[in-house]
Length: 226
Image 1 (cartoon, one colour):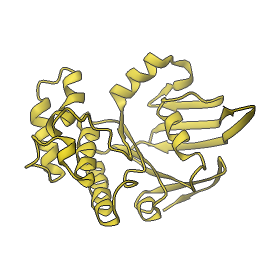
Image 2: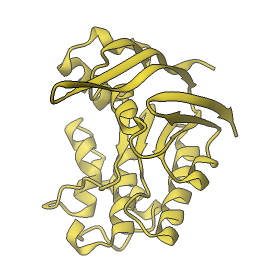
Image 3: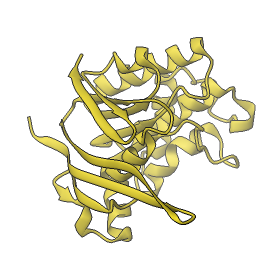
């Protein structure tokens, strides 16, 4: 299998007052196409920072990131944004839906931005897949947290991304709703053959992936096959 993400000797630190805080130190791993991969670790272990670096939302101090056969270090911000738009999907803990758009419009927007004439039909099909066929015209404020996250899942898969980054996708949901969202995420992922990278503190969710990377204090403790 071809590698879709390769991370080598990654380091990231932030200035905090007069102190330099190292958030990640000497991080190296690889993810193959269509693999499901979880990054786990306690709060403050650097999980979300690592996800942001892998997706090109931020730049490392040193080390190399290759995503979808492109070396991210060589790209400027606009080029990284273009790569994300073409190849990458996101699911966030806080849903990040546009409040002034309906569920259907939220899902269709990424496709419309690409000039896809089937955006509305594709959006409806995806919302039906996640069990929201009767919610096309509802705004985020009219939906429960679980329903909002299902809209976010439909939106993330709408562009058929090569790789999907999910940051604590069940973090704002109760246990039962979280389980349903996880089932949907895994199911949609299998169907589309997308590479899936999940940051989570939920070990039950992590065990549904093929590989788990454990972080502690900004370093890799271990990488295990599930």
